Structures are given as structure tokens and as C-alpha cells.
Amino acid sequence: MRELLLRALDEDEVNLAIVNEIKGNPSRITFYSNKGEVLLTILISVTTTNERINISPSQLKIVSEVQKLNCLSDILGFELVDKADGNYIHITSGYEDLIAKINFINKFGDKLDFQINVKKILDKDD
Image (cartoon, rainbow, N blue to C red; front, top):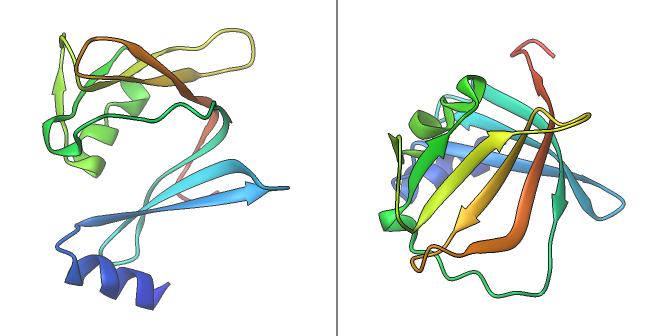
């Protein structure tokens, strides 16, 4: 972990995300500060295809309908806005057993098939 945090600092990154997997599938994302403090942990599943993702990270914004995930704006360093036309992360309320769905919208305003399904948001102590 120390080596990863040092590498992030070398790359001028403030925070670090570690994705854990179960049987090859993403299951958890833990976001850490550059001091190694846990900022946020979410239990997830993903929906993917072989589609190529064409999103410019330097222009990304976040549109969120889930207050508990608004902190991703600070963690990821993307502006939180009420509305965007393209190149944004769209966080919507989930359904059934999901807390939220995280979708990526390209510069043309098209929703990509890649989706992060948030099953649970863990406290920092979990």
C-alpha cells in the first residue's frame, strides 16, 4: 500500500482507488487519501461489454442524484454539477437491492454500456 501511495504522489494524484475482485469480477472500491486514510468504500458489481470507452478524464463532471455519493466529486477531483451535456459521470438512485447506479456519458451524450452498481456504502470503520 505504501508503494502505491508513493507512486500516486509521484504522478501528482491526490487520492487512490483500489478495486477488489471476487472470481475476477470487481466487488469493492476503496478510495484512500494520499495519507492512506479510507475516504469511501463501496460494494459493487459491474455491467460491462467490449465497448471502447471514449471519455476525456480532463473534462469529466459528476451529476449525482444520490447525496451519499456526492463526495466522489472531491475524491475524484471532478466538478459536481446539476446538469451536463456530455463527458460526465451520472449517479442515479438504484432499484431493488441497489443504492445507486453509476453510468458514464460520452461527449456525444450517449450512455455507455459500462455501469457500476452500488450495493452498499460502508462506513470508514467497516
